Length: 275
Image: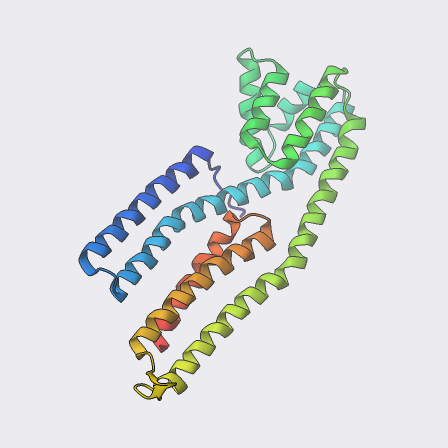
């Protein structure tokens, strides 16, 4: 059974950012008042960042899956439109008939468009409203084609057959690009975990053993200070490494937030357990 992802509106994502960032700022202020610039305050800042990023990350992921599902159903939709047109239906009639079938998240949007037409909205207006609601790159490219085909008499076989091929080719190229960039994302993760292993090994086998010994005329940094420095370095590397992974894998910085969360939490747990 395929689970359909819910649609996430832009205002919902903005609201999530406002609420989560406000909570994070409140937590940071509370930590500063209670502990000042101590290691306890560092952990308050760390979890404040997690709180600020987690809700928008979940919504961005749901929105990404919803848009991807829409694009994946477009070729089937175009094929059905062509078949309906060949039976003698007009374009609005074809879309009304097609809306009774299953096309993932597109089904609800097609039904909404048909309802708007039945309430008196013109076909072009309803189609433009559909494009605004769905608002994927592929949908924005295909809506003008549908409108022009409707204006020219509604015979869209010659329009939708090559358009369907174009969409399928675009989806295949996008899948190929993701497959090609996946090893680079893996490299970022491997590099991060190698970094974690290295600092833990150095701390356990080297820095602890030279505690208090003078080095070049000055005492070595205390282990507690080293732990705090490593904590800062790990959090920074995890956050920005995740953003780079998202940019490489999916083309957007927002897509990297989930990678940032994963690496930050893994780094925090590793340092707590072994450092």
